[in-house]
Length: 479
Image (cartoon, rainbow, N blue to C red; front, side, top):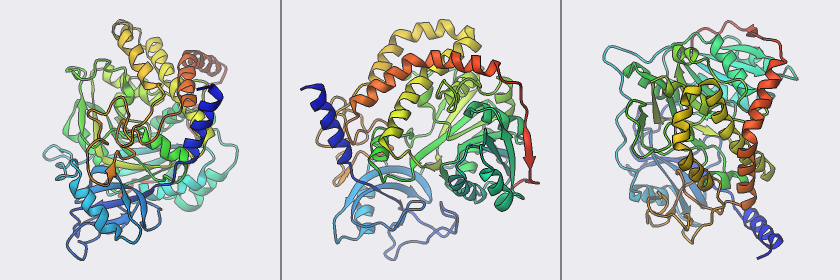
Protein backbone atom coordinates (compact mmCIF):
# COMPACT_ATOMS: atom_id res chain seq x y z
CA UNK A 1 0.00 0.00 0.00
CA UNK A 2 1.43 3.40 -0.96
CA UNK A 3 2.02 6.11 1.61
CA UNK A 4 -0.64 8.34 0.01
CA UNK A 5 -3.23 5.57 0.08
CA UNK A 6 -2.45 4.71 3.72
CA UNK A 7 -2.73 8.34 4.80
CA UNK A 8 -6.00 8.69 2.91
CA UNK A 9 -7.46 5.67 4.68
CA UNK A 10 -6.31 6.95 8.06
CA UNK A 11 -8.03 10.27 7.37
CA UNK A 12 -11.23 8.52 6.31
CA UNK A 13 -11.25 6.36 9.45
CA UNK A 14 -10.62 9.41 11.60
CA UNK A 15 -13.43 11.45 10.02
CA UNK A 16 -15.83 8.51 10.40
CA UNK A 17 -15.50 8.49 14.20
CA UNK A 18 -18.87 9.44 15.68
CA UNK A 19 -19.63 11.36 18.89
CA UNK A 20 -20.14 9.46 22.13
CA UNK A 21 -22.51 10.56 24.90
CA UNK A 22 -21.30 10.90 28.50
CA UNK A 23 -23.39 9.57 31.38
CA UNK A 24 -23.21 8.37 34.98
CA UNK A 25 -25.14 5.51 36.53
CA UNK A 26 -25.28 4.87 40.26
CA UNK A 27 -26.21 1.26 41.01
CA UNK A 28 -26.60 1.99 44.73
CA UNK A 29 -28.06 5.50 44.95
CA UNK A 30 -28.97 6.81 48.34
CA UNK A 31 -30.36 9.90 50.07
CA UNK A 32 -26.93 11.26 50.99
CA UNK A 33 -24.67 13.62 49.08
CA UNK A 34 -24.20 12.64 45.47
CA UNK A 35 -21.28 13.19 43.14
CA UNK A 36 -22.49 16.50 41.74
CA UNK A 37 -22.98 19.95 43.24
CA UNK A 38 -26.41 19.25 44.73
CA UNK A 39 -28.04 16.60 46.92
CA UNK A 40 -27.69 13.06 45.66
CA UNK A 41 -30.63 11.41 43.89
CA UNK A 42 -32.69 8.78 45.61
CA UNK A 43 -33.28 5.32 44.20
CA UNK A 44 -34.98 4.97 40.83
CA UNK A 45 -38.69 4.32 40.67
CA UNK A 46 -38.11 0.57 40.39
CA UNK A 47 -35.38 0.52 43.02
CA UNK A 48 -32.72 0.24 40.32
CA UNK A 49 -29.89 2.51 39.25
CA UNK A 50 -30.11 6.25 38.70
CA UNK A 51 -28.89 7.55 35.35
CA UNK A 52 -27.93 11.12 34.64
CA UNK A 53 -25.86 12.88 31.96
CA UNK A 54 -22.25 13.76 32.58
CA UNK A 55 -21.34 17.28 33.71
CA UNK A 56 -22.74 19.73 31.18
CA UNK A 57 -24.04 17.01 28.87
CA UNK A 58 -27.60 16.73 27.51
CA UNK A 59 -29.94 13.92 28.62
CA UNK A 60 -28.98 10.46 27.41
CA UNK A 61 -30.70 9.18 24.28
CA UNK A 62 -30.12 6.35 21.81
CA UNK A 63 -26.64 5.75 20.45
CA UNK A 64 -23.20 5.07 21.91
CA UNK A 65 -22.65 6.07 25.54
CA UNK A 66 -19.53 6.31 27.68
CA UNK A 67 -20.84 5.32 31.10
CA UNK A 68 -19.26 5.88 34.48
CA UNK A 69 -20.62 3.28 36.89
CA UNK A 70 -20.91 4.29 40.54
CA UNK A 71 -22.00 2.55 43.72
CA UNK A 72 -23.09 4.83 46.51
CA UNK A 73 -21.65 7.75 44.57
CA UNK A 74 -18.19 6.17 44.33
CA UNK A 75 -16.74 5.44 40.86
CA UNK A 76 -16.13 1.71 40.32
CA UNK A 77 -15.96 1.12 36.53
CA UNK A 78 -16.51 2.53 33.07
CA UNK A 79 -17.94 0.94 29.97
CA UNK A 80 -18.95 1.80 26.45
CA UNK A 81 -22.50 0.73 25.59
CA UNK A 82 -25.07 1.35 22.91
CA UNK A 83 -28.70 2.25 23.55
CA UNK A 84 -30.98 1.03 20.72
CA UNK A 85 -33.39 3.54 19.24
CA UNK A 86 -36.67 3.52 21.17
CA UNK A 87 -35.18 1.70 24.18
CA UNK A 88 -35.10 3.05 27.74
CA UNK A 89 -31.52 4.28 28.34
CA UNK A 90 -31.70 3.64 32.09
CA UNK A 91 -32.85 0.03 31.68
CA UNK A 92 -30.31 -0.77 28.95
CA UNK A 93 -27.34 0.81 30.70
CA UNK A 94 -28.27 -0.58 34.12
CA UNK A 95 -28.29 -4.10 32.67
CA UNK A 96 -24.93 -3.54 30.98
CA UNK A 97 -23.45 -2.11 34.17
CA UNK A 98 -24.60 -5.02 36.30
CA UNK A 99 -22.97 -7.48 33.91
CA UNK A 100 -19.66 -5.63 33.86
CA UNK A 101 -17.01 -7.61 35.79
CA UNK A 102 -15.59 -4.48 37.45
CA UNK A 103 -18.85 -2.96 38.69
CA UNK A 104 -19.08 -4.90 41.94
CA UNK A 105 -19.35 -3.39 45.42
CA UNK A 106 -17.65 -0.05 45.91
CA UNK A 107 -14.23 -0.09 47.58
CA UNK A 108 -13.94 1.12 51.13
CA UNK A 109 -13.45 4.87 51.59
CA UNK A 110 -9.91 6.18 51.70
CA UNK A 111 -8.35 5.40 55.10
CA UNK A 112 -8.00 8.23 57.57
CA UNK A 113 -6.00 7.83 60.75
CA UNK A 114 -7.97 7.67 63.98
CA UNK A 115 -8.54 11.11 65.44
CA UNK A 116 -7.27 12.93 62.36
CA UNK A 117 -9.06 14.87 59.65
CA UNK A 118 -8.30 15.61 56.04
CA UNK A 119 -5.50 18.19 55.97
CA UNK A 120 -5.91 21.87 55.23
CA UNK A 121 -5.29 22.03 51.49
CA UNK A 122 -4.40 24.63 48.88
CA UNK A 123 -5.85 24.03 45.41
CA UNK A 124 -3.69 25.61 42.69
CA UNK A 125 -5.13 26.22 39.20
CA UNK A 126 -2.71 27.63 36.63
CA UNK A 127 -4.45 29.28 33.68
CA UNK A 128 -3.78 31.44 30.65
CA UNK A 129 -6.49 33.27 28.71
CA UNK A 130 -9.27 30.72 29.26
CA UNK A 131 -11.59 32.56 31.59
CA UNK A 132 -14.70 30.79 30.31
CA UNK A 133 -13.29 27.34 31.11
CA UNK A 134 -11.81 28.56 34.38
CA UNK A 135 -15.23 29.67 35.65
CA UNK A 136 -16.61 26.12 35.36
CA UNK A 137 -13.56 24.72 37.12
CA UNK A 138 -13.84 27.22 39.96
CA UNK A 139 -17.55 26.54 40.42
CA UNK A 140 -16.78 22.84 40.87
CA UNK A 141 -13.96 23.62 43.31
CA UNK A 142 -16.19 25.78 45.45
CA UNK A 143 -18.76 22.95 45.61
CA UNK A 144 -16.25 20.54 47.19
CA UNK A 145 -17.23 18.78 50.43
CA UNK A 146 -13.69 19.09 51.83
CA UNK A 147 -13.96 20.91 55.18
CA UNK A 148 -10.85 23.13 55.01
CA UNK A 149 -9.26 24.41 51.81
CA UNK A 150 -8.27 27.50 49.85
CA UNK A 151 -8.03 28.17 46.12
CA UNK A 152 -5.19 29.98 44.34
CA UNK A 153 -5.48 30.91 40.66
CA UNK A 154 -2.14 31.57 38.97
CA UNK A 155 -2.55 33.72 35.85
CA UNK A 156 0.43 32.71 33.71
CA UNK A 157 1.90 35.35 31.39
CA UNK A 158 -1.47 37.03 30.81
CA UNK A 159 -1.99 39.21 27.74
CA UNK A 160 -5.44 40.45 28.78
CA UNK A 161 -7.22 41.19 32.06
CA UNK A 162 -9.92 38.56 31.46
CA UNK A 163 -8.82 36.18 34.22
CA UNK A 164 -8.15 38.95 36.72
CA UNK A 165 -11.55 40.49 35.99
CA UNK A 166 -13.33 37.13 36.34
CA UNK A 167 -11.79 36.36 39.71
CA UNK A 168 -12.32 39.91 40.98
CA UNK A 169 -15.93 40.04 39.79
CA UNK A 170 -17.17 36.55 40.68
CA UNK A 171 -14.79 34.96 43.18
CA UNK A 172 -12.81 37.64 45.00
CA UNK A 173 -13.94 36.61 48.48
CA UNK A 174 -13.17 32.93 47.92
CA UNK A 175 -10.23 32.75 45.51
CA UNK A 176 -6.74 34.26 45.63
CA UNK A 177 -5.45 35.63 42.34
CA UNK A 178 -1.71 35.54 41.61
CA UNK A 179 0.12 36.54 38.43
CA UNK A 180 3.26 34.87 37.10
CA UNK A 181 4.78 36.79 34.16
CA UNK A 182 7.17 34.02 33.05
CA UNK A 183 5.38 31.58 30.73
CA UNK A 184 5.38 27.88 31.53
CA UNK A 185 3.20 25.51 33.51
CA UNK A 186 5.95 24.44 35.91
CA UNK A 187 6.83 28.07 36.64
CA UNK A 188 3.16 28.79 37.33
CA UNK A 189 2.85 25.75 39.58
CA UNK A 190 5.94 26.81 41.53
CA UNK A 191 4.37 30.23 42.01
CA UNK A 192 1.24 28.53 43.35
CA UNK A 193 3.40 26.36 45.61
CA UNK A 194 5.11 29.46 47.03
CA UNK A 195 1.71 31.04 47.73
CA UNK A 196 0.22 27.89 49.29
CA UNK A 197 -0.76 27.97 52.97
CA UNK A 198 -2.05 24.40 53.11
CA UNK A 199 -0.32 21.33 54.53
CA UNK A 200 -1.16 19.68 51.20
CA UNK A 201 -1.13 21.40 47.81
CA UNK A 202 -3.37 20.03 45.07
CA UNK A 203 -3.02 20.90 41.40
CA UNK A 204 -5.61 20.74 38.66
CA UNK A 205 -6.27 22.39 35.31
CA UNK A 206 -8.60 25.14 34.19
CA UNK A 207 -10.40 22.75 31.81
CA UNK A 208 -11.73 20.28 34.37
CA UNK A 209 -14.92 19.87 36.36
CA UNK A 210 -14.23 18.21 39.69
CA UNK A 211 -16.43 15.61 41.34
CA UNK A 212 -17.80 16.96 44.62
CA UNK A 213 -15.70 14.54 46.71
CA UNK A 214 -12.57 15.01 44.61
CA UNK A 215 -10.53 16.98 47.11
CA UNK A 216 -11.56 14.92 50.14
CA UNK A 217 -10.67 11.65 48.40
CA UNK A 218 -7.40 13.03 47.04
CA UNK A 219 -6.14 14.39 50.38
CA UNK A 220 -7.45 11.86 52.93
CA UNK A 221 -4.55 9.43 52.28
CA UNK A 222 -2.09 12.04 53.54
CA UNK A 223 -3.71 11.92 56.97
CA UNK A 224 -3.52 8.13 57.05
CA UNK A 225 0.08 7.74 55.84
CA UNK A 226 2.79 10.08 57.19
CA UNK A 227 5.20 8.70 54.57
CA UNK A 228 2.99 9.69 51.66
CA UNK A 229 4.46 12.43 49.51
CA UNK A 230 2.07 12.48 46.56
CA UNK A 231 -1.42 11.39 45.53
CA UNK A 232 -3.06 11.25 42.11
CA UNK A 233 -6.60 10.59 40.96
CA UNK A 234 -8.86 9.52 38.11
CA UNK A 235 -9.36 11.68 35.01
CA UNK A 236 -12.34 10.96 32.73
CA UNK A 237 -13.56 12.79 29.61
CA UNK A 238 -16.07 15.61 30.01
CA UNK A 239 -16.86 15.57 26.28
CA UNK A 240 -16.51 13.03 23.48
CA UNK A 241 -18.07 15.14 20.76
CA UNK A 242 -15.28 15.27 18.16
CA UNK A 243 -13.22 12.55 16.46
CA UNK A 244 -10.08 13.86 18.18
CA UNK A 245 -11.63 13.53 21.65
CA UNK A 246 -12.93 10.02 20.99
CA UNK A 247 -9.66 8.86 19.43
CA UNK A 248 -7.59 10.10 22.36
CA UNK A 249 -9.85 8.53 24.94
CA UNK A 250 -10.11 5.22 23.12
CA UNK A 251 -6.35 4.88 23.52
CA UNK A 252 -6.37 5.38 27.26
CA UNK A 253 -6.82 9.13 27.58
CA UNK A 254 -5.61 10.21 31.00
CA UNK A 255 -7.24 7.42 33.02
CA UNK A 256 -5.22 4.96 35.10
CA UNK A 257 -8.05 2.59 35.95
CA UNK A 258 -10.31 2.04 38.96
CA UNK A 259 -7.98 0.08 41.25
CA UNK A 260 -6.25 2.10 43.99
CA UNK A 261 -2.52 1.53 44.28
CA UNK A 262 0.39 2.68 46.40
CA UNK A 263 3.87 3.03 44.88
CA UNK A 264 6.62 2.61 47.49
CA UNK A 265 10.29 3.16 46.56
CA UNK A 266 11.26 0.90 49.47
CA UNK A 267 9.35 -1.96 47.80
CA UNK A 268 9.48 -1.42 44.02
CA UNK A 269 6.51 -3.04 42.24
CA UNK A 270 7.44 -6.32 40.58
CA UNK A 271 5.21 -5.59 37.60
CA UNK A 272 6.90 -2.24 36.89
CA UNK A 273 10.48 -3.07 35.83
CA UNK A 274 11.09 0.54 34.75
CA UNK A 275 9.97 1.97 38.11
CA UNK A 276 10.13 4.85 38.87
CA UNK A 277 10.92 6.15 35.37
CA UNK A 278 7.55 5.23 33.84
CA UNK A 279 6.01 8.10 35.76
CA UNK A 280 3.09 8.34 33.35
CA UNK A 281 1.70 5.24 35.07
CA UNK A 282 1.25 7.19 38.30
CA UNK A 283 -1.17 9.87 37.16
CA UNK A 284 -1.33 13.24 35.43
CA UNK A 285 -0.94 16.88 36.32
CA UNK A 286 -4.66 17.64 36.05
CA UNK A 287 -5.26 15.61 39.21
CA UNK A 288 -2.37 15.49 41.66
CA UNK A 289 -1.53 16.57 45.20
CA UNK A 290 1.68 16.74 47.24
CA UNK A 291 2.56 17.18 50.86
CA UNK A 292 3.58 20.82 50.68
CA UNK A 293 6.77 20.47 52.70
CA UNK A 294 7.91 17.48 50.64
CA UNK A 295 7.41 19.23 47.31
CA UNK A 296 9.21 22.33 48.56
CA UNK A 297 12.07 20.19 49.88
CA UNK A 298 12.75 18.72 46.42
CA UNK A 299 12.67 22.19 44.86
CA UNK A 300 9.20 22.04 43.36
CA UNK A 301 8.86 21.47 39.63
CA UNK A 302 11.71 22.05 37.21
CA UNK A 303 10.78 25.39 35.58
CA UNK A 304 12.33 24.29 32.27
CA UNK A 305 9.65 21.61 31.87
CA UNK A 306 5.94 21.84 31.19
CA UNK A 307 3.54 23.25 28.64
CA UNK A 308 4.41 26.76 27.55
CA UNK A 309 8.16 26.03 27.41
CA UNK A 310 10.35 24.58 24.64
CA UNK A 311 10.29 21.30 26.59
CA UNK A 312 6.53 20.99 25.87
CA UNK A 313 5.68 18.98 29.01
CA UNK A 314 6.92 16.57 31.66
CA UNK A 315 6.61 18.82 34.72
CA UNK A 316 4.15 16.51 36.50
CA UNK A 317 6.24 13.40 35.76
CA UNK A 318 9.31 15.17 37.10
CA UNK A 319 7.51 15.98 40.34
CA UNK A 320 6.34 12.39 40.82
CA UNK A 321 9.80 10.88 40.39
CA UNK A 322 11.58 13.49 42.52
CA UNK A 323 9.23 12.77 45.41
CA UNK A 324 9.61 8.99 45.01
CA UNK A 325 13.39 9.35 44.73
CA UNK A 326 13.40 11.03 48.14
CA UNK A 327 11.81 7.92 49.67
CA UNK A 328 8.19 9.09 49.85
CA UNK A 329 5.26 6.99 48.71
CA UNK A 330 2.76 7.85 45.98
CA UNK A 331 -0.92 6.85 46.13
CA UNK A 332 -3.20 6.53 43.11
CA UNK A 333 -6.77 7.10 44.28
CA UNK A 334 -9.43 6.55 41.60
CA UNK A 335 -12.18 7.82 43.90
CA UNK A 336 -10.69 11.30 43.42
CA UNK A 337 -12.34 12.10 40.07
CA UNK A 338 -12.16 15.06 37.71
CA UNK A 339 -13.78 15.38 34.28
CA UNK A 340 -11.38 16.77 31.68
CA UNK A 341 -12.19 18.66 28.46
CA UNK A 342 -9.98 16.99 25.89
CA UNK A 343 -8.66 18.92 22.93
CA UNK A 344 -11.03 19.01 19.99
CA UNK A 345 -9.24 18.99 16.62
CA UNK A 346 -6.78 16.92 14.60
CA UNK A 347 -4.26 19.74 14.85
CA UNK A 348 -4.67 19.59 18.63
CA UNK A 349 -3.90 15.86 18.53
CA UNK A 350 -0.76 16.46 16.48
CA UNK A 351 0.41 19.07 18.98
CA UNK A 352 -0.44 16.77 21.88
CA UNK A 353 1.31 13.72 20.39
CA UNK A 354 4.50 15.68 19.74
CA UNK A 355 4.29 17.28 23.17
CA UNK A 356 3.85 13.93 24.93
CA UNK A 357 6.98 12.58 23.27
CA UNK A 358 8.98 15.72 24.00
CA UNK A 359 7.76 15.97 27.58
CA UNK A 360 8.73 12.36 28.28
CA UNK A 361 12.37 12.72 27.33
CA UNK A 362 12.55 16.30 28.63
CA UNK A 363 11.53 15.19 32.11
CA UNK A 364 14.05 12.35 32.03
CA UNK A 365 16.75 14.84 31.04
CA UNK A 366 15.66 17.14 33.85
CA UNK A 367 15.91 14.30 36.35
CA UNK A 368 19.44 13.42 35.35
CA UNK A 369 20.55 17.05 35.30
CA UNK A 370 19.09 17.82 38.74
CA UNK A 371 19.63 14.40 40.34
CA UNK A 372 22.76 12.81 38.80
CA UNK A 373 22.64 10.06 41.42
CA UNK A 374 19.75 8.56 39.46
CA UNK A 375 21.95 7.93 36.41
CA UNK A 376 23.04 4.35 37.33
CA UNK A 377 19.43 3.27 37.92
CA UNK A 378 18.39 4.95 34.67
CA UNK A 379 21.12 3.25 32.63
CA UNK A 380 20.23 -0.13 34.14
CA UNK A 381 16.67 0.28 32.88
CA UNK A 382 17.57 1.86 29.53
CA UNK A 383 17.29 -1.27 27.31
CA UNK A 384 13.81 -2.06 28.60
CA UNK A 385 12.95 1.61 28.45
CA UNK A 386 13.77 1.78 24.75
CA UNK A 387 11.58 -1.26 24.09
CA UNK A 388 8.79 0.38 26.10
CA UNK A 389 9.16 3.59 24.08
CA UNK A 390 8.82 1.67 20.80
CA UNK A 391 5.63 0.06 22.08
CA UNK A 392 4.32 3.36 23.43
CA UNK A 393 4.67 5.14 20.10
CA UNK A 394 3.64 2.30 17.77
CA UNK A 395 0.79 2.77 15.32
CA UNK A 396 -1.96 0.49 16.61
CA UNK A 397 -4.74 -1.28 14.77
CA UNK A 398 -7.94 -2.75 16.14
CA UNK A 399 -9.89 -5.93 15.65
CA UNK A 400 -13.65 -6.19 15.19
CA UNK A 401 -14.26 -5.89 18.91
CA UNK A 402 -12.44 -2.58 19.16
CA UNK A 403 -9.46 -3.97 21.06
CA UNK A 404 -5.81 -3.99 20.10
CA UNK A 405 -5.51 -6.81 17.58
CA UNK A 406 -2.02 -7.70 18.73
CA UNK A 407 -2.58 -7.64 22.47
CA UNK A 408 -6.06 -8.45 23.76
CA UNK A 409 -5.09 -10.57 26.74
CA UNK A 410 -5.85 -8.74 29.95
CA UNK A 411 -7.39 -5.75 28.19
CA UNK A 412 -10.50 -4.54 30.05
CA UNK A 413 -12.32 -4.06 26.76
CA UNK A 414 -12.09 -7.79 25.95
CA UNK A 415 -14.49 -8.64 28.74
CA UNK A 416 -17.20 -10.24 26.66
CA UNK A 417 -19.97 -8.16 28.25
CA UNK A 418 -22.93 -8.21 25.80
CA UNK A 419 -23.52 -4.82 24.23
CA UNK A 420 -20.44 -3.28 25.83
CA UNK A 421 -16.91 -2.81 24.58
CA UNK A 422 -13.64 -1.43 25.83
CA UNK A 423 -14.58 1.90 27.33
CA UNK A 424 -12.72 5.10 26.59
CA UNK A 425 -10.77 5.75 29.75
CA UNK A 426 -9.88 2.12 30.32
CA UNK A 427 -6.09 2.09 30.33
CA UNK A 428 -4.77 0.62 27.06
CA UNK A 429 -8.21 -0.04 25.51
CA UNK A 430 -8.24 0.54 21.76
CA UNK A 431 -11.52 1.66 20.26
CA UNK A 432 -10.00 3.08 17.05
CA UNK A 433 -6.70 2.69 15.19
CA UNK A 434 -3.94 5.05 16.36
CA UNK A 435 -2.73 6.83 13.20
CA UNK A 436 0.86 6.43 12.04
CA UNK A 437 1.10 10.20 11.70
CA UNK A 438 0.61 10.60 15.45
CA UNK A 439 3.06 7.79 16.22
CA UNK A 440 5.73 9.47 14.11
CA UNK A 441 5.11 12.78 15.85
CA UNK A 442 5.49 11.15 19.27
CA UNK A 443 8.84 9.69 18.24
CA UNK A 444 10.01 12.99 16.78
CA UNK A 445 9.02 14.65 20.03
CA UNK A 446 11.03 12.12 22.03
CA UNK A 447 14.12 12.91 19.96
CA UNK A 448 13.54 16.63 20.44
CA UNK A 449 12.75 16.53 24.19
CA UNK A 450 16.32 16.84 25.58
CA UNK A 451 17.03 19.69 23.16
CA UNK A 452 13.83 21.43 24.16
CA UNK A 453 14.69 21.08 27.84
CA UNK A 454 18.16 22.60 27.36
CA UNK A 455 16.66 25.44 25.33
CA UNK A 456 14.15 26.11 28.09
CA UNK A 457 16.92 26.22 30.70
CA UNK A 458 18.86 28.67 28.57
CA UNK A 459 15.79 30.86 28.10
CA UNK A 460 15.12 30.92 31.83
CA UNK A 461 18.64 32.10 32.58
CA UNK A 462 17.89 35.20 30.52
CA UNK A 463 14.75 36.01 32.56
CA UNK A 464 15.09 38.08 35.75
CA UNK A 465 13.96 36.24 38.87
CA UNK A 466 10.31 36.90 39.65
CA UNK A 467 8.26 36.29 42.72
CA UNK A 468 4.58 36.01 43.49
CA UNK A 469 2.90 39.17 42.21
CA UNK A 470 -0.51 40.68 41.96
CA UNK A 471 -2.14 38.86 44.88
CA UNK A 472 -5.73 40.02 45.23
CA UNK A 473 -8.80 39.08 47.18
CA UNK A 474 -9.27 38.17 50.84
CA UNK A 475 -9.85 34.49 49.99
CA UNK A 476 -10.07 32.86 53.36
CA UNK A 477 -10.43 29.12 53.74
CA UNK A 478 -13.47 27.51 52.16
CA UNK A 479 -15.53 25.56 54.64
